[in-house]
Image (cartoon, rainbow, N blue to C red):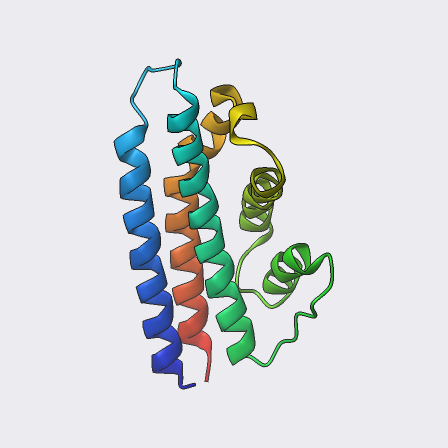
Length: 146
């Protein structure tokens, strides 16, 4: 894979994430607190999809750099740690992404009827800025690569 191909892949993935965020914005209504279980499940799915897209980007960048993330039960956390150690993301972004990783784990193992707006709202409120910061950091990092 060339640097240009890596950059093109990441941009395409960011476009997919932007589409997911657009869909999320169609469900979330300012000032609303009484969402149905279907609406909450949709939001949770969009949050999950966004985080998975960001993980896909990190996996691809690390693969380009020949950084190994071993297939262990902790590989998701390891991915964030290694991306931070290699300067792809900073500690602040690692912490934010860690919140989405925790949600991802909950989402995969829980029933959607257990979702609560009060628990999802902080993630929804922060996701646009998190994705923007993530995209900027990744593209800046790619520019520094040989």
